[in-house]
Image 1 (tube, protein in one colour):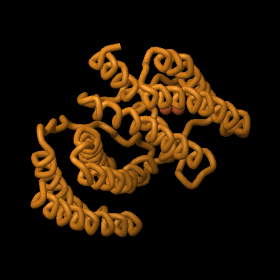
Image 2: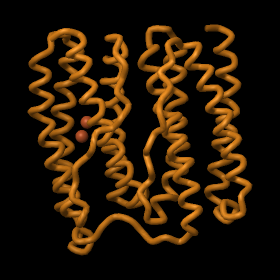
Image 3: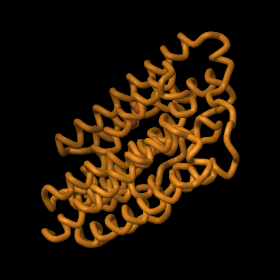
Length: 285
Ligand SMILES: [Fe+2]
Ligand SMILES: [Fe+2]
């Protein structure tokens, strides 16, 4: 298989893993992370994050542009039973898919990654099947998600912040994968993408607690042609994000949610730290 065909194949897989992360994360947040089903979904989402990351690293190393647009995750939302059956079907289909791809590539690392994604998908199917079997009849017939307790406008405000932090996070993943050969900076950018995932969770959880699906919709990513450009953009973004979070934190409705106010305190201080660090790196690249 030539390199371009390999990149295209892996980019399809990247989009599928991305879709699985979003589906399982949204499900986890709708259940509540501190519930048995929510904790389980979160654990699956984390494993899908590894899958996406391994593929992203390979694509970047091959000189490809990672496809950061998620595929569609097909599922029947009627009840937890139909949802979990959809998950089992989805994961089971990936086993022959990834094994088939592994058979077509020669590179031992890529082959191993694809094989691992096959057997981890098989594990996921089994885990979902087991979880479904353990649900009470009431849970099995029900749907994830609670009731809305805050004004619609507040949920929309959070949704906007979710979308922009999600974009920023994806932007960092792209930079880390594409510029992995520039040395330590790539790894530091990856480190920040993980902080952004956590910040994203702080915004997405209250959305889901109010019966809405967090909106993981990115705006157009910046495909910077150099690490310097990518870092300048990252600095602009994190400063803008910090200013917006400070504004949001001071708004009257936000002030009514003490836990969110604390999480925003965390976030803006982390954003200040990140901005200062990036300023330092920009002097070195
Ligand atoms: Fe996966
Ligand atoms: Fe999976």
